[in-house]
Length: 71
Image 1 (cartoon, helix red, strand yellow):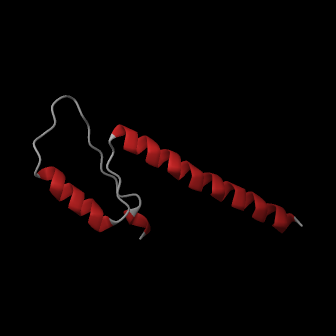
Image 2 (image 1 turned 120 degrees about the vertical axis):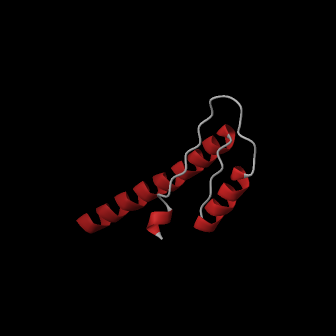
């Protein structure tokens, strides 16, 4: 019985996490964030951005490899 309850709780938690990914995607899109899911895409975007002029103003760019560490 307790295992069934734990399984239901885990499924509900996992579903909530999947839904929050949609929220992140929408926020990133609105903010102009370039999000990649594959390591090769990260390199492709980096190569593209390096060839662009520096943006004016006090913009900040952050690159993280959190997802890449899970490969």
